[in-house]
Image 1: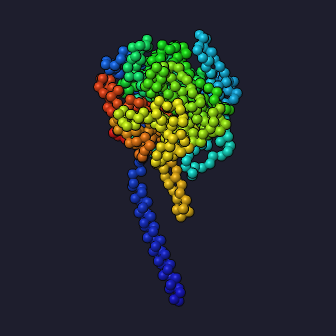
Image 2: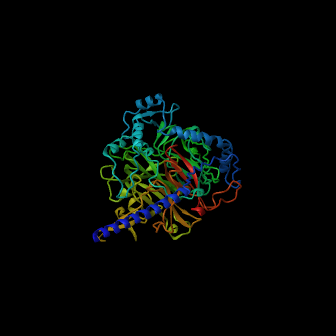
Length: 594
């Protein structure tokens, strides 16, 4: 009897609890039904057409700059319509777009071996061009690889994150048959979206491609290209002893370049453009190119009046495959050249293979120099080439050089102790976008001599030992086994640029992070401590973005507004490559809003 009473009481309690729970759940459901579930999201393309009403350039600039300004104003009249055309052009240039049977047949005929993405045929300019150029087309098999990757949404491996899932060996095998660019087309979505203040960064206009301010297809034979490394050429005044009128310019080095849309036509490893434009709020204008050495201050080194020529070739220092030569950094040093000339330096990488998305293998990195404003270039293999591993170059491998395959040069601010000492800081990353950032420095008159470099080991500078270099970005340390084992991971960085910014009075670093967003860090010194990364734009806003390259005049009085007054110093201008369009756009970030 007592047992039955006990059971009855327990049952009653259960019923009571059940009723109470039902009441609570019902009330919660009713509240949920009345809750506003609307959400909003924004993804601003921020495409800004080139100004229809751009004003005259600053009348106090040089004659050449004034001529550039007039041409820029005339070109700007067509810019609005050109931007609309550009959007259509961008959609058709992507190799994921549908192409007609004729294109596919042509591609198949000219693409018997795309494993190395090496050019397969030579073309000679009919007018007796200075150099041979290589015809490069997109292969139909490469497009099939891209479609296969898209169907399984293969994501970019995010090194150095140990939790990244392993990709299937079959898919990785397929990817190796295409170029890096093909693989990246399947990974344009970010791994994770980062918060961004939309109004802070806008796209001013396209620097390269069809139509727009420069119409590089018609004027330079450039329908598609990327990277767009920028640096000041260091020429502050004209030399009356020469017949050429020297002027201060910004030089821009680009990577793989195609003469026709959809990455077809005549292919070049790289090209160079020049600009004295100092009003960037309505775009970055490049003047016409002039053939041969008299064109050393024209818009580009040229093969013929409408075709830019390659500046860095394949010099024969690679052992095994060599797909292409890509510029990664540039800097000018006044007085370092012959007879006191200003010498231009460009750091480049020799690509051995395009691997999985965001990954590639290099043979070596090297430095070329020019004493005529980028018109003619020379490489010094004995002292400037850094093999990435043993057996990939005719030069010996030195441990640590694998971390300096891509670069970013920066000069300290004028008047600083570092500037007086003549230091140039050279940042490095391994091949691909999965490595982190390292730092070296060298006297500006010894850039070509590896033995003169010093490397930051986290607390001091170590001479002539690249293996001593330690990561400079803040890492994240985790512990295991009751704190006995510590592991530190460092942020991964894609193609990057660094400049000293006069407005912030800090060094500014831009790169693409592991989530495929453009981020910015700042530091009072080249070695850090570097700030937390702040997102400028995401790849949901600009699909397929990469390679943010800072304009060297940002934050200085060299930049002007259309009315001739000094540009707002907080405006940071930079180039951004986009895979879908496969061209380079000029961006602007208001640093007060970041």
